[in-house]
Amino acid sequence: MKDYEIKDISLAPEGHRRIEWVRQNMPLLRGLEEKYLAMPDAEKPLKGVKISLSVHMEPKTAYLGKVFAAAGADVAATGSNVLSTQDSAVAALADSGIKIYAIHGESQEDYQRHIEMCLEHKPNIIIDDGADLVSTIHARRPELGAEVWGGCEETTTGIIRLKALAATGKLMFPMLAVNDAQCKHLFDNRYGTGQSVWDSIMRNTNLIIAAKTVVVAGYGWCSKGIAMRAAALGASVIVTEIDPVKAIEARMDGYAVMPMDEAAPLGDIFVSATGCDKVITVAHMEKMKDRAILTNAGHFNVEVDMPGLEAAAVNKYEARENVMAYELPGGKTVMVIGEGRLVNIAAADGHPAEIMDMSFAVQFYAALYVAENRGKLPKDVINIPAEIDEKIARGKLEAWGVKLDSLTAEQEKYLSSWEL
Image (cartoon, rainbow, N blue to C red; front, top):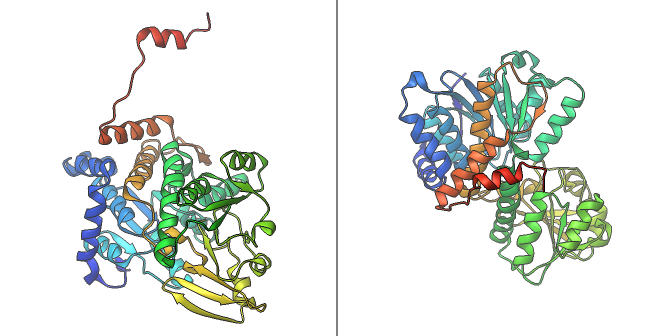
């Protein structure tokens, strides 16, 4: 098997330039890379450890792969979405000697083949984004599970899949819930998704957001960021929810809350970020305004019912790059960005580098934790240790030049005492 399967190695110079751009804006990862590159090979903490990485394969994630390699790891990588791969970043990784199997726009069959090629690496540690590597081991290649010490999962949807697997008692190795770390979901999910979703929608439509009605499905951390940025851009925001507590939170944050059936005729732009399937159905689409814009910000392309829409449409055409128009039998047209896939990365550049610096620092330290605790962790979904969050937060503040107060001995005594 070749060490890479990519579109075009000649794209490597462009990829190196783009990776260098994010490197300069990711001080936490850059500090780790510089530390380990200066370290003798024999002392590197991941020397000889095989890591298989399935992430949205673009410059920021490519840089994470290079940082793992700097720490001594033997890295194999692939994508986690058929549209999110950026071929220049992939070429740069191949040019750097990292095993890589990913091509932008590949078929679902080739995507799955690349997942399995990445697993032929026989990893000790898995870095997953959506749990495709872990799911493939459990469903198709269980013999590879014996080599795995544990892994790290990046996203909400992947955590849902892993917890469902763990609930059956069949999870073969420990998986750290990177998504649930404070330095991940509080910032990546909220501020990263909030900015990158609207970056994608605006660049792909060239339309104003102000004075429009935006419908946001769900009110988890990603949806909070999406709604917050929509309001900041001048939109009226409607939130749909199934959780009464989150619905109260959305209402108190200033948004209207109602079922999707009621929101469908009101919205100009729809963004679903729930982790569930068929959140926006053809029945909803039939109630929408003509030329309503539909997007998905969840990991898998199941939140907007694309198979149902393909079957119901009497005609479709490309309205703009990354925007398909679907004409419905009643005469209305709906616009779908990025095939209903993860809109901020399938049709744009994903989260800002400064945000992913924190998320990927969590991934890196979580992988070190797995390596250091090999054989000691339960075969379950495990929370990130609090000391990792604190280390990353303090490092980020230091990079910003921000200083904190500290407790005096008297204050520590006060806080640890129950007496008045």
